[in-house]
Image (cartoon, rainbow over all chains, first blue to last red; front, side):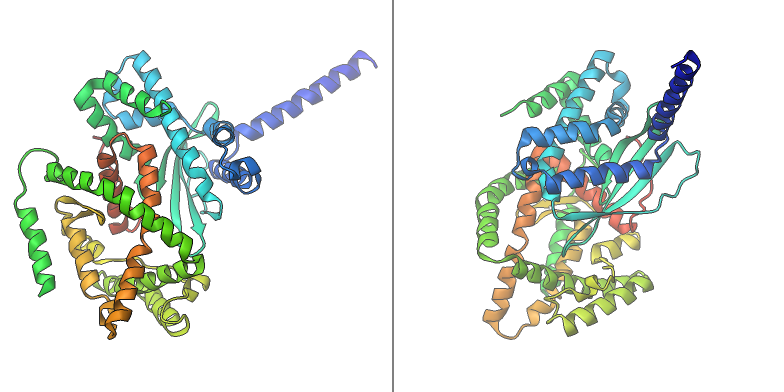
Length: 203
Length: 229
């Protein structure tokens, strides 16, 4: 094999890697939501460990499939509201970490309840060059009213990330803002961190 | 007469609003007491009842009870669609009630949903909101759950005017009351499980979620943007 050929193979390889990489980064927000939710639903419906309620396996699914698509720093900052700027970088880091853990635990606990449901995806209404969008979906369960779930997403350096989830009109960020405010009022930011740690430590 | 009394009781309750605390929850102190009273009722009444109910009553029967309640809700939705001039929803809800009552054994089978007719889901609380009546103070009622003076008034009207009250045979009527009430418990127990897991302070969490949800319903899914802080 001559050097020229080696070089051209190398270039082709690079081109493929580039195309594959950009295809992932360019994935539209609604396509991302659809792909990830379908992946998770498939696992819930087919994985025997998940169906048996194996918490370790469920958490693994949440950690590997869902978490990479969330911007927890922005989510935490929004839930903190104006208190976010009062927190030191170290406190901010802890808040993001603890809040993330709480949400993972909550979501993992609820995940197995979604076994019999299907999801509908609404057409995305946004400009092609928008950097903030709301992806609208609907959870449909037999014999029950459909529950709308909206994902607020922003475009960053590593693609689209979710920074709020609105279930039937109840925003995650807004709901926790009251909770955080109340804790900070009574015990300061460190008080809030302690409460979150206590909540997250296994009972 | 019962209606008047209930509304007067709620009005009196809202009239003695104390100053201090949150504007939307002036009775926070007494609401929190009610919330405390509610906890053992969920744990030692609702939970065992829900377990027994889901064990004994097969799922198709539970669905039938849900459909029965939904059909009556749809009936009230027609009234509230009209009161808000939402004629498209009113058409849907009228179609739903006629189909489900006529062909679904008095609403036990939800044929209309199978046919793809969406539920309007308008209630009196939303109608009051549509016409600019504020929520009034937030209230927490043991076993009933979160409400507001506005929504609670709507719920009372819904209960007092329910066609179930017109079932002539007392025993049959009471059986229906029983099923309708007990049918709620599994959903309530599940919701509390989620709150237990998610909330730092369950009282605050439930209050915020309830008020957000109702605001969203009043504005048909397009509430005005939340002010930061």
